[in-house]
Length: 211
Image (tube, rainbow, N blue to C red):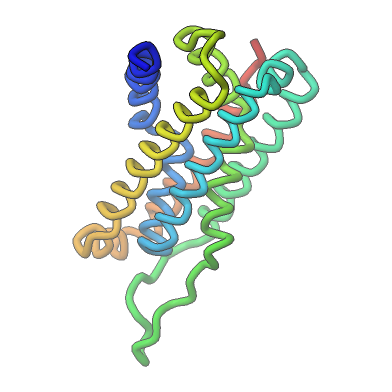
């Protein structure tokens, strides 16, 4: 048990830097929070965390190694992910100004369905081959081959929980009244900026090479 705790601590020491590093997932949650609201951003956060468990599971099963060694599979995932991020970027650029204030009769603006909000986060992370290489590298370097599969799955569950907690925190921060008021004033330019960020991450993903 002591050895497993040391492995988990080592994994989290590395993973904590990956959590807080700005990326497409962070941009996705921030835009969801500012454009659609806290509920949607939290659901997107859970989608991202669930996708992380998807990556961890197939890494443990050995499929991650197959994907990393197959140029065809890697390319399919890479181009699908790049196309998805660029599509999200184009949609953000076309969004224009977002009105976060209730409409005149007191009704709330149209909201995303729970499935769509969750799916945005899941797909943004799942259609990215970088986690394949990331989890293969850190599990290979920090986790012993003799560690049981269920223990490795538990490591992934802890990592996913921490990732969700981080993005839920981001969701709450970005939906405070002050932040939403600031976004309402500058929503047109923030939508354009977030669109350019999504497209940039999509192009960066497209340039990724299997190793």
